Image (tube, rainbow, N blue to C red; front, side, top):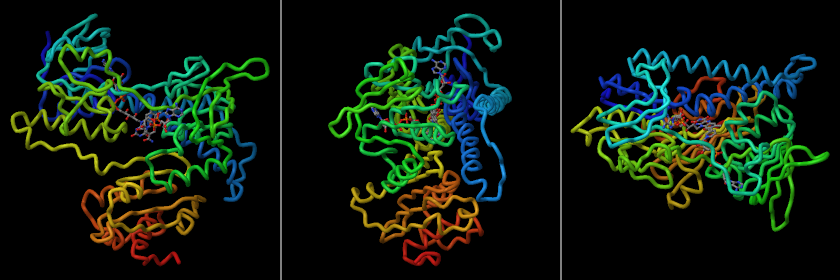
Length: 478
Ligand code: FAD
Ligand code: NAI
């Protein structure tokens, strides 16, 4: 039986990062992956969605606004199969990069499915000849085991949810032809990004969301702002709507028909496909957690602030912990777990996870990004607060980029100037949010943010303007 210092189950964005860090810290490391390195994020999540969205946004921008900007692009169209092929090329290239990093760090990559056979042992089945450990089923032993098995799309128990016309995000991202129309169940992050993609390509989109608003959990200003933008672009949004049944269409009505209840009335929405985007569930059933006595809650593995489970030497990181299902949070957890393992007996000195400052981005058009508390959360916490808002319409660079919808909103503590949260809907919001996250991490005050000289013309200037606006001192706003 081969022995390792650390073995990781899952080579997603958290598993491979933690493996690299363990190897950097001198641990003999094994990484076990049963699909492709990069996990959901690279192969079925972050990267493919953004690759498709990038082209779709370019297409929509040139088609709808090219002429206003002096571009004469006649007969502009798109070839979805080529879009999908480019997305796959981006994925392959990044995947090859991860494979090289793993190899370069002399990590033993085992291609197969791992399950616990004891608190220190893993049985791996389905290994392939290309791996360092050849053969059918092998057992490995490790002083520390890190579970990074991730998550998979969830569904809901409504009649028709298992019809072939109902696709989860994995299936949507495998399409080589764009559907003419789609009903999206769930107005969360996945639902809204797919709505943006299809709408940008000129397709009909209907969203059925059970809560009173889309993008629940985001600042109210963002939820309302994006609802307005999507609605104006033709996306039909039904909130506080309960899905009752999905049926396969027949005769002239091909595709699917979704029956739902809204405001006490029974209604129908139809689409060529139905996209199920109602959240993700942990991948842990197949791990035989009981063999090691690992505690879980509805499949999510219970961890402490250093990602340790209830069993000494076993850690869990990423989506399977159910903390925050974001790739960058997962990666940060991986580094904390690796540091805890390397610290050994001095583990109490190792860093802990801090979930207080996490940027969250949605790749809509314009983009959305947020960090810290929403205004509702600040109110509920009873904190004295001020807000500063700067509209994208007042920013020169945004106007140049033809992106004048949106704003930067900063929420600060009224007495100390501490930055409590920021909510952005603007072009490049997903890049802008890093500045505020860093300011919050460095405990900079809003005054320091306002006093920082920002280059002109940039979209970043909106942050400085919103910071000035907190004290009513914004020069580009009356
Ligand atoms: P995963 O990425 O799920 O990786 C787990 C890996 O473990 C998988 O490769 C799996 O095959 C493997 N595995 C599981 N069980 C075993 C086993 N028994 N043996 C061996 N291997 C096993 N997040 C963002 O931050 N930004 C985004 O823009 C973003 N976009 C997304 C878009 C979509 C459509 C989706 C679905 C998700 C998106 N996410 C995004 C979320 C992000 O993908 C996840 O938070 C992230 O992938 C979690 O990483 P992970 O390593 O914990 O799990
Ligand atoms: P989600 O939790 O964001 O949204 C699911 C939505 O479905 C919720 O609004 C919920 O109210 C709704 N819903 C649940 N049951 C329903 C029902 N029966 N009828 C109608 N609506 C129903 O989950 P989602 O969108 O599946 O994404 C999963 C995770 O993936 C996210 O939490 C996020 O962390 C991650 N992700 C991140 C992205 C990013 O960072 N840009 C992009 C995509 C996903």
